[in-house]
Image (cartoon, rainbow, N blue to C red; front, side, top):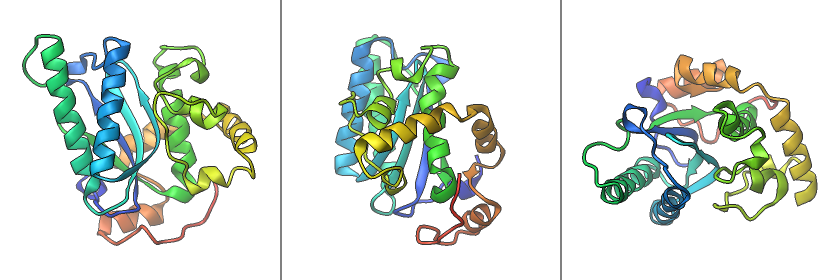
Length: 221
């Protein structure tokens, strides 16, 4: 992953990916999923992050997050992975690494790519054939964002999500429509190419080390 994408500024969106070591399953039962989310709640209360979306599949964690203070992303993720690894090894009487190294993070340009990244996360369980439709998967933020369900984790609402409609019902309706119009493989390709999800202007600024959190870019999907 390019070094430039590991930025620590408050207010910068990140798509975080954390995988099981040697592709081992991180979540073997429902209790494992719930334990991870409980640890995530604890971590973001101590190291403040907004969590806008998530999906826990068998061997991978996807998060769409925004640190509220500089440097909080790494601290929060290190706390979650450390404590979950302890839990996992104790429960399954195993030793060694649980996660495949340090988490990956991709800086995300909000104006154009926030919703695209959120949609990609929602469709991950579908693309991995865990369910036929995103609405059928319990351990993601889709049910909260698309239907207003209570869900396993109460995700935060980004301003761009709020702008989808004047009421919760309107936002949910528009969000469902956007998710079903999206081809997730294209976003995955963007992530793998550069480690930065955004326009050429955004990528140039991130690679230069400039402060990008207050920069306004051309809006659109």
